[in-house]
Image (tube, rainbow, N blue to C red):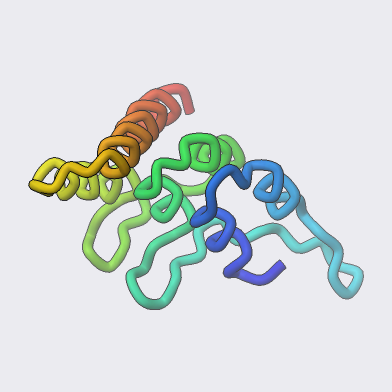
Length: 123
């Protein structure tokens, strides 16, 4: 599995089934290769959890936490995944346009932040 497959999955909607496949260790050259849960992309230093959190992908974020992804990694802006999601919420709150799609996105991200808070307490 390439490093970017998990990252791409975290960016897309309703990809938990794909994520489950990508999270499985695989065989390569006779060796077992584990997925790289904490890979940071080169532009902003976001991990798959950062990307999923700021897009409101609750199932992906919780799944990543459950399989051992590190929720404390900071991106190049100095934010953890939950802090990144909160920053997006703040930006949406400051958006004067408040389109319907913005309200829906805000709701998804707020739900993800709440789920992350609970998952981080439980783990």
